[in-house]
Image 1: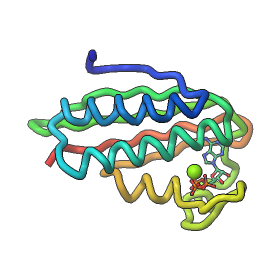
Image 2: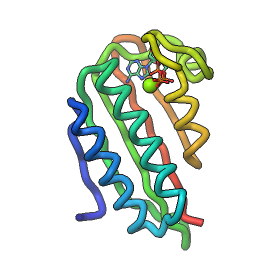
Image 3: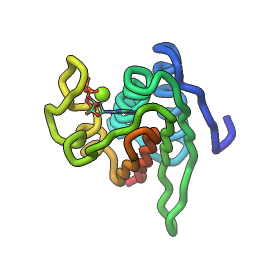
Image 4: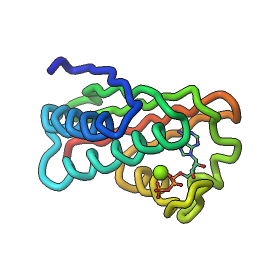
Length: 133
Ligand SMILES: Nc1ncnc2c1ncn2[C@@H]1O[C@H](COP(=O)(O)OP(=O)(O)OP(=O)(O)O)[C@@H](O)[C@H]1O
Ligand SMILES: [Mg+2]
């Protein structure tokens, strides 16, 4: 696998694939142990949101370096309906579906860096990073 991959996300099988690729790349970045599961879980949540709320999108995975530290960056984008109120969407328990509303706030807690950008009607971009310890 190269150190940067762009993966299409449009069906459930893609969630499994992107989760696995993210885990592999995180290992290459020096992430180990339960942090590999942490990265995979955060990727799953973001990928599943793409399928459920935006139908399709893509996820870029790459290794980043900051001084001597390496990490994995995950950039998820879609051109779906977007999120009108990000603060609301980031709250535990907020869901416009019949779901738990824990995906976005959970991913933010799991990763070291988390940024979400959206405007209603313009899709969503989530950028998150996990650093190796
Ligand atoms: N890619 C997206 N496009 C449009 N809306 C989104 C997207 N991702 C999340 N949302 C909105 O943000 C809300 C919160 O997302 P979150 O993942 O936290 O919860 P959920 O998907 O509703 O439930 P859970 O992830 O716990 O099953 C969603 O209900 C949806 O309204
Ligand atoms: Mg979700």
